[in-house]
Amino acid sequence: MRHADLTRRTAMALLLGGAAIGHATAADAALLNVSYDPTRELYRDINRAFTAAWQERTGQRITVNQSHGGSGAQARAVLDGLPADVVTLALGADIDMIARRGLIAADWQTRLPDNAAPFTSTIVFLVRKDNPKSISDWPDLIKPGVEVIAPNPKTSGGARWTFLAALGWAQRLPGATAETAELFTRALYRHTPLLDIGARAATTSFLQRGLGDVLPSWENEAWLARREFGAENFTIVYPSISILAEPPVAMVDSVVDKKGTRRLAQAYLEFLYTKQAQEIAARNFYRPRDVAVATQYAESFPTLNFITIRDFGGWDAAQAAYFADGGMFDRVFAPGR
Image 1 (cartoon, rainbow, N blue to C red):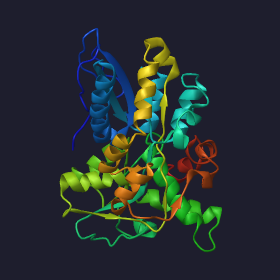
Image 2: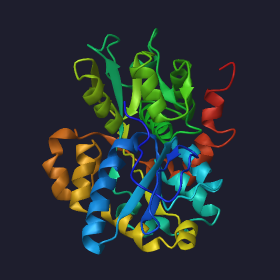
Image 3: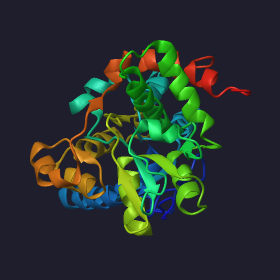
Image 4: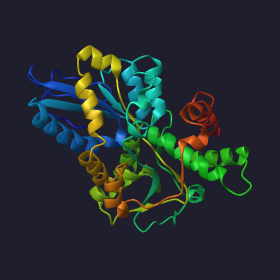
């Protein structure tokens, strides 16, 4: 599996929070896109297309550099000084955390279409050849002998989407109560022997280290795994209920104003909504927002029974109830659980 992208020339060499930056001439401009784990391949392709389009439009050579890691860890890196011009993270709560510190305008989610989420994804199950543990839905993840490989919701956005998808399924069982739903999540994490820091690390544990029987995964990451490691070796299982994951994007106002890159950063984010970028997203197994592109790639994306973050009261409520210190995740994953 490919790892952090080293893009073209930039102004300095930097290694912080997963950022890998090369060299540039003084005449060139550069952006740093701080993103979550499984977007390396997506933004490699988008950055190529955007830099070519920008040069054709303006005559200016530019570089877009990438930093990748667990979404929560990436947000904290920006707060600690990683000079992101834009953030493209796994969930709104992570961008809100940066905005609360004044680095991003409070109205960031209204500055771009679709609540600033240019494409969507969901959570699926990646299982091994011939699905030997007969996994078809959420309850199969807690069958005796099944080991689940997953990242940590404290550091990974994909892990938080997974947690909420599992919880949402349990909440919709006949006769479900808050207590029975929490008991299901407790059982799920009892079947999870370790928690990786991010989605890509969990994918590596499952694919390359051969750990576990099932990987609850971003849909795009699961399809990429099949493409790179052999469709004959892995199967994607779509559960009866999953969650509509909406990874958002935002400009880091404090950085672009300091660096003088606001115009370039805005153009970059707007490019994500163009038909060209939407097609790139679809080819990288992200669900496009553009209706025409979504129709063109409809066979690649099964129709699902989705819950959304709004079913949990939005990210502020979900973060406080499930992922903050003392929240439900801490209760179900506590020592002695």
